[in-house]
Length: 100
Image (tube, rainbow, N blue to C red; front, side, top):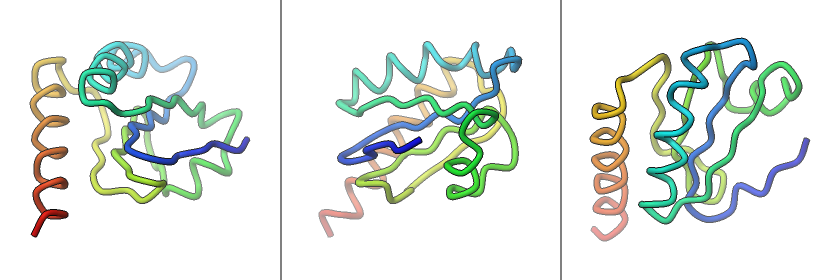
């Protein structure tokens, strides 16, 4: 599949049978909206080429990217409150580094 990972986005790589993937998805989607990101979900089973392009080794993996260029990632389950803090911190860190 072809995706337009333009602008700021959160890409969640998941497996349909992965309970942790389904648990983090609502948090990622909510934070994407809050932070002004586009949210994508990529099923590693139906789109292995995209998963390979990003070097995905396990699910869930979420990637923060701008125009398709990764600037942060996490893998595995994270509690919602930790995930929210991490997403906001990585966004601020990235934006701060762009303004230097």
